[in-house]
Image (spheres, rainbow, N blue to C red):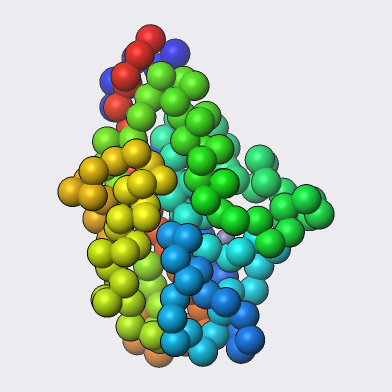
Length: 161
Ligand SMILES: [Zn+2]
């Protein structure tokens, strides 16, 4: 058991984008997306980054160990299940997320109108108040127009043990 009552987790994820695929972020289908994520799962880069942040905060590895992208049973997987599993692992060790900061980098479409919905769905997944979920958006300034990237930090606090 760690001696620290607080742990910081960090995760990041990226997917290539292609025409004719859905784009999903924080479990929310992004409307008017001309490009969608190429992925074994649903390609939700935001939730993959958050799940890795949860796991890394307690040195529990990364989502590739729990949901290998070669496993047929995870094809098209709803990434909310990945976050739920990571959260279970964190809680099993007596910790819970206190706040999370998520940054999504995407050139098009602009995500600003979705900020409240993404924050709300992420807050629900992590059982946090919306005030503890920060969601920021960046573009690549045209450097990676067929690319979605997400980065997340999470503060875990000890709640038991
Ligand atoms: Zn991913």
